[in-house]
Image 1 (cartoon, helix red, strand yellow):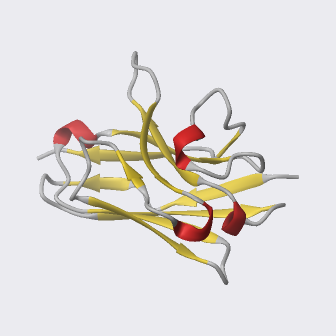
Image 2 (cartoon, one colour):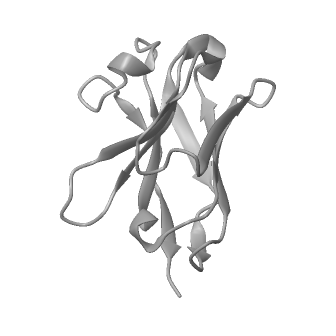
Image 3 (cartoon, one colour):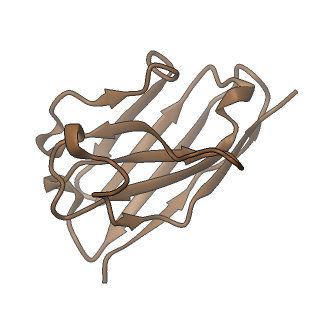
Length: 126
């Protein structure tokens, strides 16, 4: 059974940092594109960051580029999202997501990505 376990969310002040982690079971993340969507109440899911199989150039949404960094730990079958210089507008539920049939970030989109984590809340507030 394919599933993810997410951790690392929480509350921080503007300018603070958090690191999210996403550990997969049931399949290997090495060979697929994996990343995070986020969603605030009343809004559509937004693809925030993605890393393709073989760690080719990652994708970052313009709103987070330069502040967020995605990385992998192959041994732990885990990906991480380091979030720095957090802003109140980063407040969302973040969902790790991947699909065994999606290898590149260019096609890593909600209709094609069928396996999602449980979501973790990130709150940025003073």
